[in-house]
Image (tube, rainbow, N blue to C red; front, side, top):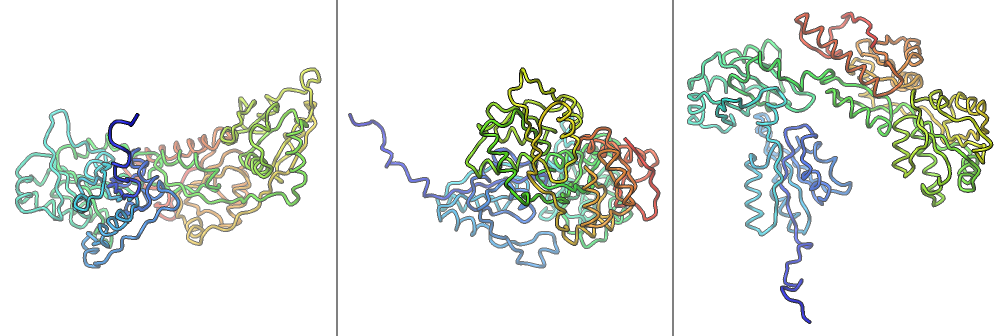
Length: 556
């Protein structure tokens, strides 16, 4: 019986046809990308992105994606703040006609980008299928991050103006209305735009906010009026400046009043807003810690101080892993992510997987160690209920019982410099311990010269020390942090080491946890911010303090 309906051959071979996704990358905060945008980026063959959003979208594209550079071809337009780029439309069309999946990423939302509209028409004319993934528009996202709502319960009109292309009629209409005006312009053209609105009928005392680098940790907002904005920017020493061509979003209207913004400026009032925080840990170790710091408004900078290398003689580790398979052990205890990684790599070398842990009890110290095991496919049987340390693990470890424990031996894969606390405690509980060097820790290579200069010159606002070794190694490979840098330590032993190296400890974590340490630093930042506001001083970062300014020691 022949099938009904069209045959498969009747449909065009879509797999051989290119496709274009016009994607809005938002105003700058990578967290504002939509889920659909992330999906499209992950499947792209070619990424055509404007320079100011390339960093936002590139991390979501696959490793082999082609990303041709859009180069500025007109120096005069750059000075005017509107650089003319290499023809993106040709790059998009060429790749799509070659059967490739193209993502064309623009700042904000594609629907408000004139070039994107023209490129969509070109695709339609050429018969190239395309889709549009909306993004958070700059004119909406930036005011939201600046604490300036564009509408209230009365529902006033909102008008959007691009000062670079606005006609005289446009200025006249907006100036004659009482609508909230959202003006896209440049830093050195704000006063001119304000003058246009005053000339068109707006009162000089109309409130105005100006935001540069909106939605990023470089965001800065000034509150003024149409008549005072030029003076405010001059007094703040913002202008004149070689960076005057930076794009800004200005909001004109009563919702921009200073009193209201003081209550609603949620983003710039984060406790560590704009702080550059040095995290002397590897990228893998510091991932969740860096995410936490970002939630407080900080800009984490990861600098590995310890490099992990295989043991000099692998035989001991090889015998222990074979012992796991042959039933030599009752327990295996992991005290670090690196220990999990070392055992996992040895497993993969032998073609083993998590099933080799069947019948063996597994212990882990710390949330990250436990998470690394779960990622491996192993759920720990024992994680300390209290302090996440060797001592905390011993508090919960059961004594050896010959009736219930058929085997009395524990496999302990560790670093070559690990302390003997856990080994001695397990022996005291009646267990035999195979204390095996699973990896060696060596001092990492020095960071790049600009990072070293920032550390010694006060370019960082804070540094988080999570162990005594991170103190010793950071000072050894990069030098001592400047005295304006806030020093935060995870515990008394780490603080003592920092003080021995001539550092003043400002923040001490209440618990030996990297996340509690980050919380303590955020609390320090909040107290510092509040003290400045009470004193009527501008809120500054530690790296912005005047040389010689005194700072009191604070422990949280």
